[in-house]
Image (tube, rainbow, N blue to C red; front, side, top):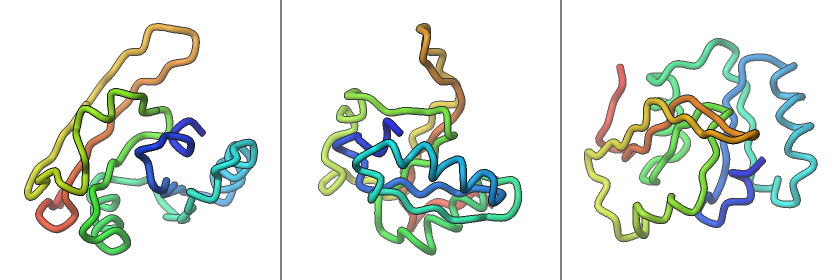
Length: 122
């Protein structure tokens, strides 16, 4: 829900496996006023980075994309990447493979940013 409210996140694409996952995402998003920034896509199987990259290339071509596990949330440090309209992302991938947030509400997991035109994960 936090990423739906982030000023630098234009849209969240939730790639889910099952109808139960989809119902859970809709339930969580219903409590967020900016849930209009959510698109749910039922992938139908366990998501791989390759499948996420193909989805991004097909649906988000030419945009800067962040692929993140559901337990990852972005904060003000996202602005350190700069303006995505002027940032040269050609062929670039930024990855954080593990992050430990030491507090009561935290997340761990993985995310990466990439340019949909020049990066493949197959």
